Length: 173
Image (tube, rainbow, N blue to C red; front, side, top):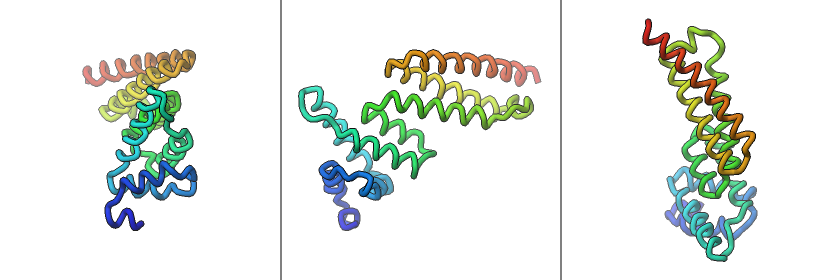
């Protein structure tokens, strides 16, 4: 807490990177997020990742896993931050699964009643669902998960058909 009070977030990040007991130090992730300084940790991961291309040590997978787990537990609604963390640590395949799960939640939130689906709000949810499935598909492809890539594309195509039906109905009414 002393580092947080005096604004020494860089030292906090160095401490996190040096001590591999991430599960016991998850509260430090919270300090970084709450004070808008998570980018310091992500910059460190990017630097290590760039150094790995040159033969240096790669970022610690345990740090990536601990940070993603922390973000999912404490900031599950912040999809933008979750995507940023996954991409920073090269976790495209896991990101694809996360996006697919989010797409299914949005689709289930629509329900089955035509009145709910065939509304401006329903159209927005279908667009969000389509976007999530397409993004998931792209990351599945990057991760060489071809079957799940195709499956996500198929669901995106079905969402497109539903979306077009909703748009035609809304335009006619």
